[in-house]
Length: 139
Image (cartoon, rainbow, N blue to C red; front, side):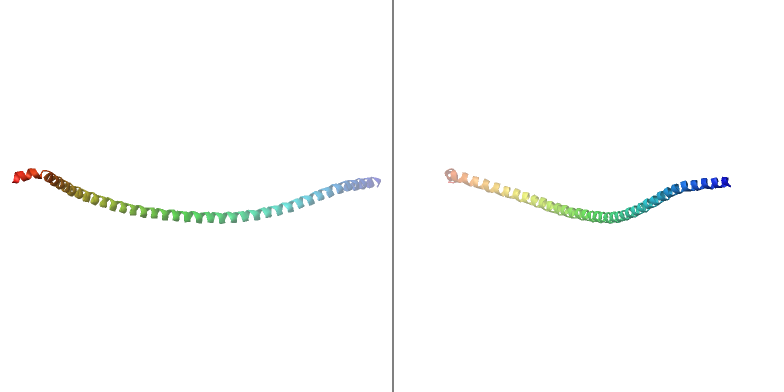
């Protein structure tokens, strides 16, 4: 029986040695569980931040799309206005060209009449200056 008691004592010692090891393992498991809980909380917070950022990005992208759409419409409107102004300028230019042609024709007529008046005046002045000559000729 003493042999059995030795075995029991050895087993008790081993159990006692394992008890300390099991307590350390249990403590490690507790710490790992706490780290796991903390990581889970951190991941949840980061997920919330990512969701908020995604919503914010969607909102910003929608605003950018709206601004782009308005800019495209404004650009089209400006181009239409430029076309209208160009058309009006072409009409004004055509009218000015037509008036210039009329003014040039009128100026030609005036120059012709002025030339006739100058020629007549020159002839009249010549006649007056040489009136004695004509008086002698016609007398």
